[in-house]
Image (cartoon, rainbow, N blue to C red; front, top):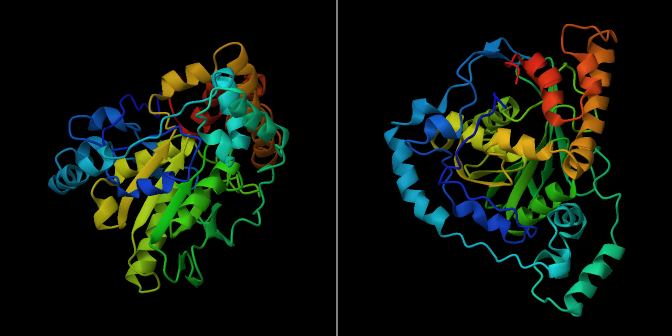
Length: 382
């Protein structure tokens, strides 16, 4: 997509599509930097044009090329690149009868917690029996509710910086609460960003948060606008390159730390899918300020759509992908668009705010983006 053109995978970010997250929390030793000299203009370019945020005056999202010659950034990259490169992935060895990519994608959402299914080593009947038993015990209601689940300890509603919208932060403390977002003896704070049409209650969000908490880290999952179970107050919500709310939350932590209400412990960023892109783009925008001003010591992402154009073409490919994956996303996206039309556009299907008829006729994510996201956020048409 023209507004999130990430065409190279930078060498200071570790990615994993692993179904096991017990070891994922250990990624915090990797470098926080999200771009590399020479790759900067290609890796995280958002747009070189001015765009308009839904709750602010026109905002220029800085092109990451401005960080290319930052000596501090280069020093930090040189220091931490070997640490990032030292991470060893486990070998994923699924049962031969269960290696289909679609089966892995769909069943993985339910079998991730099962130790017999995360990494299958046996190829005989014993391995297959374990998986079939786990499949029979699937609870399809897991993560269906957008309201705060019993997993999280606390929810904080945060008003956006222009006071006309909000997002929420769900918090899980690693110990006894000391102050907002921080427990007594935690090693630091992980800020987790979810994926497209997901939320803090998805099994992926809670599994990752649980892994981080077990390692001694307080964890906050930011719900994108409109994803917390309560409709947001502006027409837009979020997109693949929407870093406004993440940066605002980091600024809140920064001010709390400077005011003495928040101990100076390391902050780490983590995200999956769409959220992974937001994390990487945010680090690219901040450059060395991520460390010097916001105290960010690490970042890890899972399934980041670095090449957005290639990813959306795969997602929207005719057949199974479009029917199952795009179709599933479009159900909630169209429902959200209909609600926004009724609430913010007086239900007028001919509104100039976005192309409502094309939204409802969309059969792919690309078509929806072109009719809604591009129009609402002022991006060029695809």
